[in-house]
Amino acid sequence: MSKTALVTGGSHNIGQGIAIVLAEKGYDVAITYNNRLEGAMETKRQIEALGRKCFVYQASLNEADVPEKTVNQAHKDLGHLDLMVCNAGRDSRVSILSVTEADLRFLYESNYRNYILCAAAAARHMVKDEIAGSIIFITSTRAEQAYPDDFIYGGFKAAIKRACESLALELSAYNIRVNCVAPGATWPASPDRDPNKIPFIKESIPMHRSGTARDNGEAVAFLASDEASYITGVSLRVDGGLILPGMMEGYEPIQWVRKEWLQKNRDKAMEMLEASIKEGEADV
Image (cartoon, rainbow, N blue to C red; front, side, top):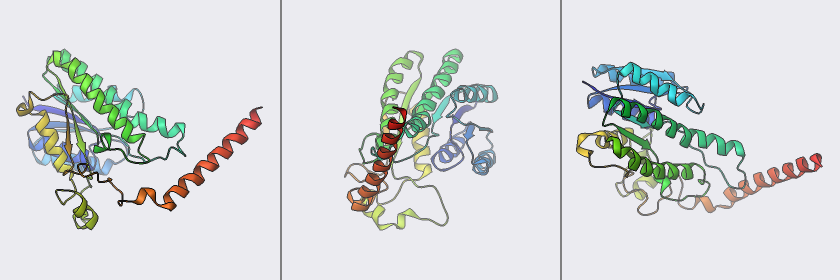
């Protein structure tokens, strides 16, 4: 019986790399996409070229009922579920001086709620089917390394890392393992962009290159394999040593303290404060 996996966000970058590597390892795969249909179909094409099955679902995982429905459909199409990879999420950097409730809600739904709801639905199927399954959360090195304007995204990634540890304890009773893969400085494959040629990357990452989607796919495949059957509740960094010297992912070394950056956030904060005061006066 073939191994099976559901990978959310499998239409591009890390999710696409994970789905393709799993197919190479013999998995039949289901993937989701939000709006990148062309990318999803390319993932499907490559997986089917390997002789494996691939099911594709359009899924807006920020909607509360969609994660469970998607997992149920994948279980039906694949026949069973050995591996749940929670990858789909959204990145954003927001200053505390200009944050809105909408920013907080969107990143919560994208990077925490959808992961937990997918994991819960997958775990229920694994328990019912008596499958020694695996759940893997794609987090980020930003869960461990603090950066300015990253208190929401990085905070929720840290929350998922912590949730992973609790789930690993709870689900071990059913022989289900739960782990995280934490990418750092990973660029999508692109024929017209080679991040390895960017001097800053080569000088700042100990391995002297950026990460690839395949790097993360191989890490996921390992954690899901029998070779990792005694590993649960861990976060595996796939970052070429990125955070060891304290490199700031996606930044020039002192960009965050530049006057322009600080002034932009201050100006936005003053606009929001003025609008809030006016709204309060109108309500009196």
